[in-house]
Amino acid sequence: MTRQQAFHHERLLAQLWRARGDAGRELRHLERAHILGQPGFSEHLASHLWLLGWAWRQRDWAEVAAQLLRLPGSLGSLLGLYPLGNPGTRRVGPLTAQPLPEDLRKVLQKPVELL
Image (cartoon, rainbow, N blue to C red; front, top):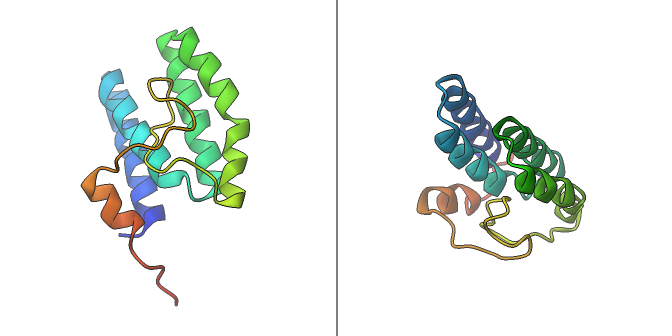
């Protein structure tokens, strides 16, 4: 599975848990999508927009504010500047790297396959 496929897979899992009314599991998959999306600007930006939507639905105003502040930080992906493993939520500082979950490490360390 490529990084982009894994990113979209996590997004689909988040949507599944949202439909089932489990905000905690939805957030877990949105955070995993954020980790996978960091290397690409559009995916990184999308992950913060999804996290913003999650925070809004939860009425978590501190998280809404954190996401509004993090949206411009998505630009770091264009320069390859982002804290690897950061879940993208306020529970971890915006510049703080975190250990990667093993399954995501394998996806992120895969060499790019050329067609």
